[in-house]
Length: 139
Image 1 (cartoon, rainbow, N blue to C red):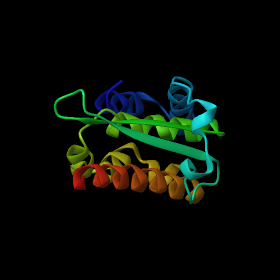
Image 2: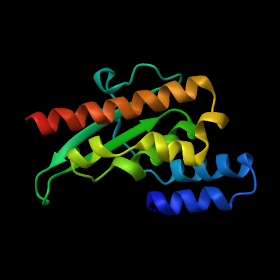
Image 3: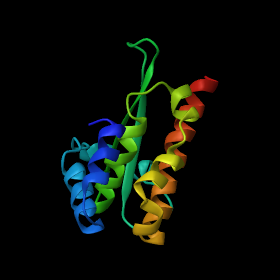
Image 4: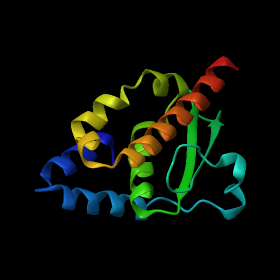
């Protein structure tokens, strides 16, 4: 599903209860993260739930893209991970840094409908992905 299709799907939902269900469903479809990658150094700070995030630059594509992998012990957070992945996963690092994800979140009305703790975690995920993208563009 592309981010445009996610936005369309969100806009079609009659209420936020249905949008939460959509997020949870998106999270269920995330590929599993191997347990050996769920290490303390991959654990994000600032999240209420546990969130592990890794990235690898795939130089076999042109331009090279960042391949993300993440997991959480919370279903709703897995959905937020899936949302972040729709925007950033399999994209060139420069494109990740240029993307206005806040405008996307605003369009989805996430700020008004997720708790402050979840917003912190979401910001932490975005910061970490951008940090990883910056490291790749500086290399």
